[in-house]
Amino acid sequence: MQHAKIGIICGGGVFPPAVAETLTKQGRGFVLFLLRGFADAAVERYPHHWLKLGKLGTLFGLMRKEGCTELVMIGSLVRPAMTQIGFDLKTLMLLPKIARAYRGGDNTLLSSIAKLIDDEGFRVRGVHEILPELLMPEGPAGRIHPSSDDEADIALGFEIIRAMGPYDVGQAVVVAGKRVLAIEAAGGTAEMLSHLAELRAKGRVRFSGRAGVLVKAPKPKQDRRIDLPAIGPDTVAQANAAGLNGIAVEAGGTIISDPSAIANAADTAGIFLSGYKAMP
Amino acid sequence: MQHAKIGIICGGGVFPPAVAETLTKQGRGFVLFLLRGFADAAVERYPHHWLKLGKLGTLFGLMRKEGCTELVMIGSLVRPAMTQIGFDLKTLMLLPKIARAYRGGDNTLLSSIAKLIDDEGFRVRGVHEILPELLMPEGPAGRIHPSSDDEADIALGFEIIRAMGPYDVGQAVVVAGKRVLAIEAAGGTAEMLSHLAELRAKGRVRFSGRAGVLVKAPKPKQDRRIDLPAIGPDTVAQANAAGLNGIAVEAGGTIISDPSAIANAADTAGIFLSGYKAMP
Image 1: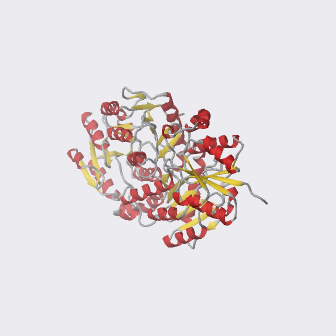
Image 2: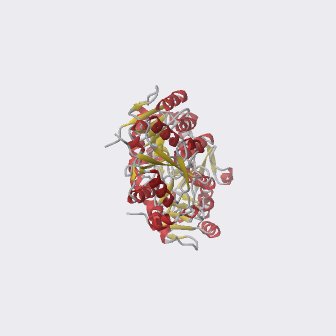
Image 3: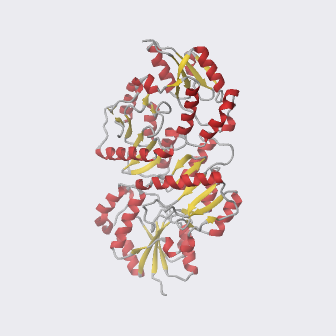
């Protein structure tokens, strides 16, 4: 079966190269749209165009020229102030819709932009649809398993992520001994973990030895085609630096860049990484 | 009417001196129990005993010797690891109860300790019962009023605090343009605001100019005799440093150390500070 050529909007981090590498191995046609200021120049070795934020007209033109009918968005992005974006004419025409979406959480914003792209006749696809092999499976990835105390913290963590759903916030939380240590908001998971490591170093959060679990899952109402939670070896290193026992994610709802590398990273750090079925 | 002599367990910060000063002016009998490592030596000018965490036997003995029948807990406290506490015999006997409470949020822990004290025949009172004049009233404290956009963020903030209620977390949140920027967990409000200021400085959270409101309120299920939210001029300075438009708190559910000082601080910083009736 002949696949359509895929356009991939790339932010920063390890996921754009992982996706490009996997698609190349599979012999699928794709072209990267690298967001200036966010994407890593290392992915320039794949077919690509550099693109500035706010240039939807340019994006749509390049998509048509390249013959892409499907679009995937991947990688990290810091949400800029609207005044920092240089808009092209097409984007300016769509600006009333974008401005409305700007008043809200990331999910509101990204879903609205996905809808604008859909409306242009392209199809926004999720990484999980294009490359299901990059999704975290159920069960522990490495040799270490969560304890029963960890399991209680994990259950509470997933429950809180669900409770936060209506507010478009909290794709990740840290729970230790049934006490909530951190809830992710602006800044992302890496920032949350480094802040927690800092609070522990300063003695503002005190435990003897390792404690707590990072729990990460898609927001209940989020459009899974965009901003699916992602973890990589750096997440394992950050969880380890924050003194946690391990990481729990939603199986089938979390992107991992390299399954064997991340299992090794967890084993080396001495923490667990485990996938859980989504709650019904 | 003759008031009972009040015992006051003091953590750190500006509230223990404010309470001691107000009670002195009113001519009420009290004695401070200053927690070593937390309380400020500046309050040594009032009748006091120094006390270590974990010495409930000592506390109960001193309370009886001083003729105190009521006890108030006030000031900031970093929750120590249980292994860092030196327990006396009385506390050791109560340890199974304390250890259970340690697995849970701050509210669980503090309520359990209040119950242990009640069971000894003392009466744990809230600051709001003893000194209602230290509670934030309804409406703006200074000259600056919230905008209608701010009001929308404030409503969302109170809603999130309510939604977090079952999880014993989140006495404060920051909302900007209907987007949740931060949720307080371990570390407290000052840490949350300084982390947000840092994220803005690093460009991880971007806005043009001032944005957002700090919303602070008691957790819905919390025992209001303990750990009532408190704000002081330092909170105003921290909210200003984080680039916020203002602060919204629950009227009658928030302690302020010095009403005129805090109104001046808000006016000087150019931000609002406003009290809102608790949601039904």
